[in-house]
Image (tube, rainbow, N blue to C red; front, side, top):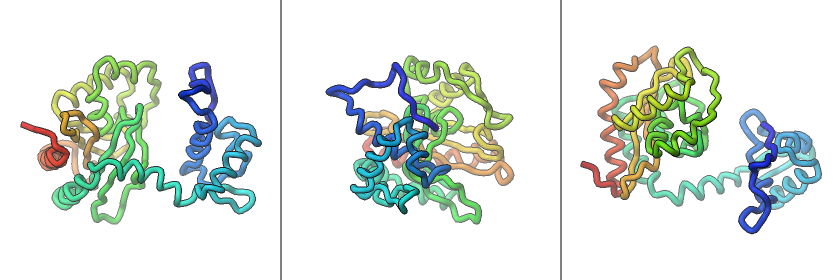
Length: 265
């Protein structure tokens, strides 16, 4: 993915430090498909000149966030400090973990918590079930909000105006034969999740993957995150998941929300 500037990009000024933004762009260029990159590859991925990319990489290397063997650059474990600063600033995760572990023991499926970032959900906590096959998802993983149960719950917490703005101009290709790609259909499903207080997504993002989600609320009654459990269609149908696992999920979401001070009826 190449990061290119446009007329809509923020301009340098008192409220925007372009060099800092470029540095973050270099960090983000290291992805699963490109864990190691040459200077030329970083420049190409970020839209920077070789000289600009080199200055940023050497700065990050001096600070201990990047290392190099002379040709290839890679992130160091120290980069995790940036993400953990967010996690440690949110007491939700310490409150949620024991409840999530108990839920996993009860339903025998993996449990995750995520927050909304634009049109993505970002995983902030995950408790795996004890199975041989495990998902590759972990803390920091991103998935498109429109086709995940947590994403639809979180999008449902937005006002209709903001929801419409985020979905405006959304161009989507189907992930599976079940994927809903038209905006009207997505709006209908997000509003349904908002109305019923939970969401089930059946194989829209990945064949065989079914997920259930419920909102996590803070003291002010605002949805700040979502909780989900996910399973495989070849083991458990959507109907069985809804009948047998949804009550436990809703109970867990309620317990976590109450730990955050939410006053639930």
